Amino acid sequence: MIALAVRTTQVFDEPKPERGFMYMVRELHEELFAGLPGQLFLGVMGGLFVVAIISGAVVYGPFMRKLDFGTIRRDKTRHLKWLDLHNLLGIVTLTWAFVVGVTGVMNTLAQPLFSLWRADHLPRLLAPYQGKPLPARLHSVHGIVDTARQALPDTEVVSVVFPWVAMCGHVLVKPVVTTPATQHRRPLVMPDASPLIGLFMPHPTASTSFTAPDLLHCLEIRRSVKPAALSEPGPNPDELRRLLTVASRVPDHGALVPWRFILFQGDARQAASAQPAAAYLAQHPELSEQTMGTFARLSRLFPQAPLVVAVVSRADPSDRKPEWEQVLTAGTVCMNLITAATALGYASVWLTGWAAYNVAALAALGVRAEEKVAGFIHIGTAKERPPDRSRPDPDDLVTEWTAK
Ligand SMILES: Cc1cc2nc3c(=O)[nH]c(=O)nc-3n(C[C@H](O)[C@H](O)[C@H](O)COP(=O)(O)O)c2cc1C
Image (cartoon, rainbow, N blue to C red; front, side, top):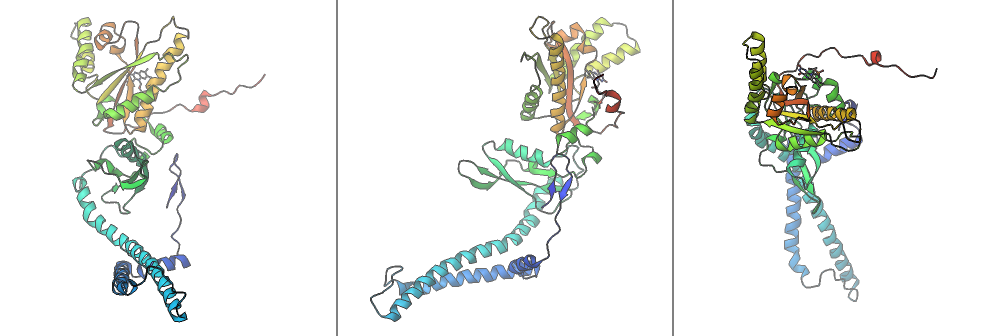
């Protein structure tokens, strides 16, 4: 077992396999230091042991039928009394030996059967992925467990079982779930096994993926990715709902909810882009290089990323809380949306541009006259990881207040 820090993925503890006395006993018990042949030998011997017990019970059972089970004839001779006692102890011991024998066979053969499953079933499961390049978006174990939880909301993931051998970079994860009603353990069955094929990413920073097992690390490596570098897949409907829920979980003075969302996805993205582009052309009929460039950019404002969320600020200056604070809240909604998308493994960028400030374009996009666009948040899967830009040094931004 390896102990990892959840937030930093730092390896705390990686115990060396023990080779002491208990290890010797276990090896002897499991495989006679002979590996697979030892396991099979012990399994077969255990099986014979169980067969011997059953056949013994079958052969000697009829002799015991003359008396009720467990009878000890105390009033007869000393010899008969001890014989009955012997038989009673014998059947109890036999039952115990039977249980030990059966569980021993199961334990001993579990490992070879698991290896057989791994050699036979696993390659077939992974066949569609063989020889293919690594997908752009990798899954963290957390993500896979989340997928399992979403697939079976009435269950609880109690363990993630790795088949020990990573095959072509893939690690099969088999969550075992238990239903609270019955506490009955059963392996997770999903219509499509592919979401359960996770990819391990030991060094997330070296990868093009933005998925990382902990949020702080996600934020440390987050970069905006331009819409042209965003591709499918985008968030599915469940993920989108989660994103908007997290985006809406923001500090909000007076709980005014001074924001709303407009979604641009699917085929509607192209039609939506045509609106501000047409508005721009109507206002800039001169065909200069610059106007044509802006027109072209507006025409592909929405279709590039799989999902664009317009965060609309609906701050009301006449409300009981300052308008400035309401505007700030809409800003935090944008950032929460980006952070949540990052945590889900998606890349994003916060854009505004001409369409966000033009009255005709805004009206065509469904933004009311009293509202403003806080940002168009473009979300999708990063085709590439852009190089980082220089970041402000917090030391340059900080002064510490001290009493004069
Ligand atoms: C309110 C707001 C509007 C923005 N609008 C644009 C924009 O229209 N075009 C653009 O290139 N970047 C825009 N940005 C900047 C990008 O979102 C992003 O911050 C920048 O590309 C730097 O990337 P980084 O997030 O990796 O630091 C905007 C940022 C904010 C906060």
